[in-house]
Length: 229
Image 1 (cartoon, one colour):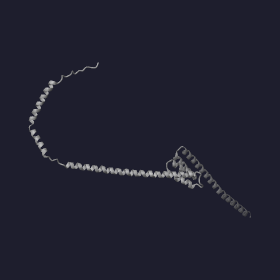
Image 2 (tube, one colour; image 1 turned 90 degrees about the horizontal axis):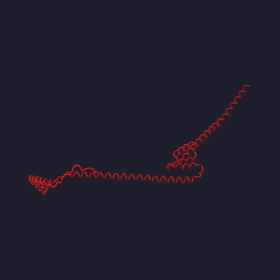
Image 3 (cartoon, rainbow, N blue to C red; image 1 turned 60 degrees about the horizontal axis):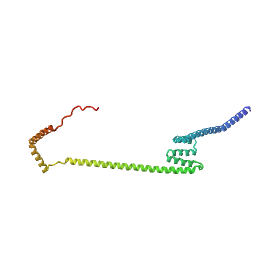
Image 4 (cartoon, rainbow, N blue to C red; image 1 turned 135 degrees about the horizontal axis):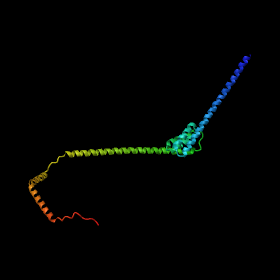
């Protein structure tokens, strides 16, 4: 009888302990989850403050990295607006418009700055459109320049071929003597046969010139001119 009472008592105590354990375990898990969540929120707040400081210093890439890390730790829609602002400051209108839209779509209620955000979205969309137009204009200019360069190269090559062809035709032409040319050559032959006449006349002229120069040449100056005193 006593053994039966002891067995029942042990079972009752064991049941109570199991019940208490089951009751305490979820509470402990919940407390751990709350503690982890609190740590995540604290880290997110720290990253948010880091991003604000970087943004105030115009370090927009650093601010973007901090806001992105904060959103990973605590996905609050407000972080998306800050991320969009960083992309706008960095000159990335397409990315900025994307995050502005995500900010509006993920907010439970319409945020107070929704009108401003819609204006920013329109501004970013216009910037994207203008950038696409500029890109197309640059591509068209590049194509025009390439076509002009190709035409210029073709024209230069054609001119070079014409010059080469004209030079080849000139080199094949042979000069043929005419009647007047033959007469001139014959006359020159006749004069050359009388070379001794011209040689004698030249010698006489040289002697006469030497005599005239010797008679009229001035007296040479002294070699020493003195110094300035």
